[in-house]
Image (cartoon, rainbow, N blue to C red; front, top):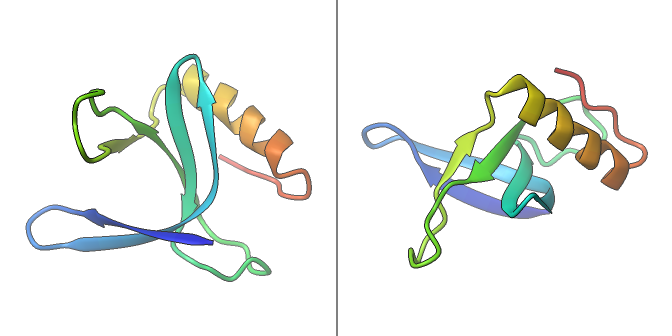
Length: 87
């Protein structure tokens, strides 16, 4: 599992493990969790890349729109056949 690091507010550093990634309607999405233990239930987050093409680094934000969240969750559930994603 790939580990990525985000700069939070202030000096806060957030680390997540990428479970899966996909592209939907021209937007990149990642499904991340704080735990690398695949056997344990853990909270996961769906983030979307909101950076511009010319930017060197990706900029992610949490998906908050319910319709968008539902659509992306369905894609991730199909990609991760044996995993259930619950809101």
